[in-house]
Image (cartoon, rainbow, N blue to C red; front, side, top):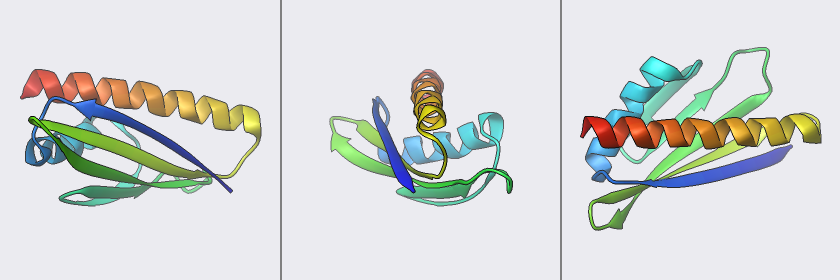
Amino acid sequence: MATIERWIDVDAEIDAADHEWTEFMFRSLVGHYRTSLGDVEWSLADDVEKSGLVTLADVGAGRTRVTVSLDYEGDAGAEEAVGGHLDRDLAAFKRFAETRG
């Protein structure tokens, strides 16, 4: 099983970023998850072999780093596609969080 990891810095305090991540999950991402300040765990639909962890870290100056670590089981071509999807999701979250704050 491979681990795909991506991160993005968001112009939002960690409390606000945590709240916005929860809103973003409800509005945009498919799956089941549980959340607490600082991290979010989720697994996607039952027929998909993916699970992961989202970590929020205060990087100072009112910014939060959102890191997604996704455990992935599948072929290399699909792994690259999943990584690209994560990049797009994180960019969408950054726009979402920064325009709502």
